[in-house]
Length: 322
Image 1 (cartoon, one colour):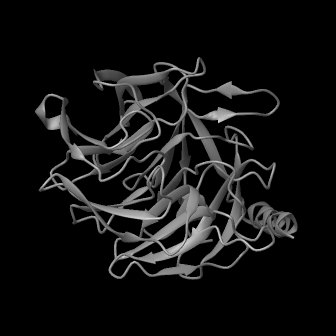
Image 2: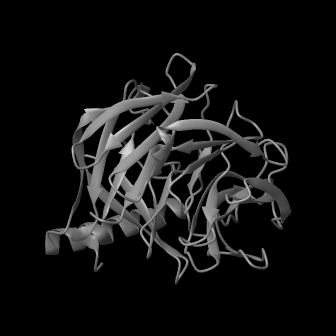
């Protein structure tokens, strides 16, 4: 049923595209990452730069480099190194322009501060209550320095809150269910949307999208038509929709999923020149000024496993009114 649902959505959107000429294209940038990688952590500074932290190489080695991609120049440079290689972490940007890296496969409980304005300094900032890895984080609002981090490494329903001004993190509650392969976005108005499979759920009924009230931590499941996730999804938010760029494997089509928080429904959107039909753990950010999604690296597996060092962008303007 789920396959048939996505197939029908794909066919519907193709009809729209053919009728209007409104098609999305993944444009390949000139710049390249220093080396191919997956599971790096990417953060947009809100101005003209994306910072890419660490990652995991095809040689099975973690990475420590901090790369800066300058959007207006389509240029990438190495600006530092983490004091320990890491992948599978998450990053937040505070209102002062500093980045905070939370957890990851090797950081575990550590929180690390990266300050572009302070000569790209890297300093220890504190600890999470428990280890985290591939755990999503969202800000309460763009103007807030409060960050919610979902899921601990050994307890998949924990919720931590990090306040960058005090640079400390505390456990604030638990989700009412255990989730894995999680991605998340915040609508900036007190609600987070989590995309993740429920642990030990009935295989015939799944709700891989949930709305979480950040004030009460109450969880509301979406309709059971969101595709199952096979790996940690890369998710971005454009202030209206969430876009899921990877992690779903119920379709072999090239493209992404757009999620509407107002209806809790989703639609599959084909993208010409998309990196692959089964894109695995790329890094991604949304750039509001250009209305583009930028994708960094990742792995594809059709027909063979390939780690990527490419950077792509997708201009969302052609589908803005769809």
